[in-house]
Amino acid sequence: MPASESRAEDLAARLSALGLATRVKPHTTYTSIEAEVPEALLAESWREVLEVVAEADRFGLLASSSTGRILWAAVNKAVPATGDVRGPGRQR
Image (cartoon, rainbow, N blue to C red; front, top):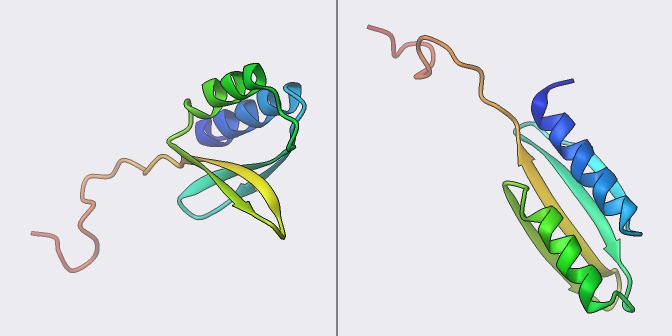
């Protein structure tokens, strides 16, 4: 398992341990973690949740009357190291 996926799975497991239902979704350049946040989440729990998602490359909170509160975090996938990252046709 690539390091980025392992990191995302670890963050999801830690959020689950705090009582949040999580989903991990792989994307082309990152792996996302989504968690439904209950209305009754205590302030101390929010601090713990924020400590976890702060380890992601980026995170945020979506809130709406139709979907409730969804916390998301993203872990970037590593870009493979190559001798020339400019792409075809750009080589000297």
